[in-house]
Length: 329
Image 1 (cartoon, rainbow, N blue to C red):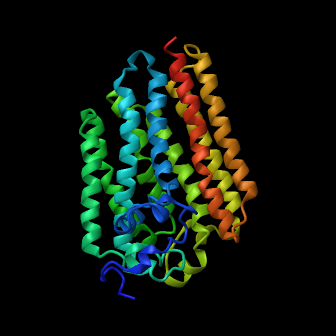
Image 2 (tube, one colour):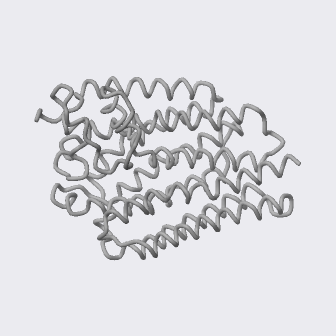
Image 3 (cartoon, rainbow, N blue to C red):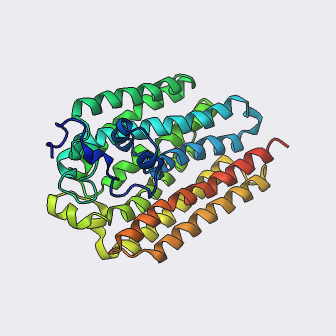
């Protein structure tokens, strides 16, 4: 086998990456030479794109619910643009993460099959792929207003810093949350033209949510992480994980409720507030269900629960849509 990140295109690239979705179109239908690049971007593992996208939709949709008089056709583009941007920027972030972590990934069972440690692409090719994806994201960002553009540029700072967090802190999941939920601020600003207290509360809710789901995810690798010196909340919290997850879930829900009540005064929009609070209750219930189902020593269950967070995040999204549409009537 060629050395990680140095060899030519390798037959290893044909193998499915360890935690990819079974039967992914990347593994079954994508052109052979495109597969390592799609895997670098985690296209075969779409849950990460959902987890990056959903806070964007939260920010946009709650901002629309808060100011229905400002809803316009351009908001549909923001909704779609965020989705395209989430695919591109999640892919760029994952590619950057794999460049930084390629030597560590080669020592961890779940990640050694990724394109760079497996030798399916070179580091230079990965850098070129980052440039293409960032270019797509930047093109979309330039269609938004100035506040959103500035926020989009600033979002690169936590993205660049994240891969290094696991080397010096036991809380790399917090660093991921700061990066992954930035879209709540950006999309709010793209609609409203500025930020508000509610936007920041929603952003903080997303960060606590990330601490919740990524701690579950990190339990898959805790033995290998201990061997190679990677730090994580899974290793830090250990058998106290469920208690901490309950705290993360309660805090995330409280912050989401605070964002709703700040954005939508009860006296002015009682129905919209009620609908949004129902969405927040569904969010809390799903997090509680995950906590009760968790077995930190069952890697396959950890992965299934982690992936279920797409549904967790969709629940408030749907409620925010209904609240926004109710404001138009």
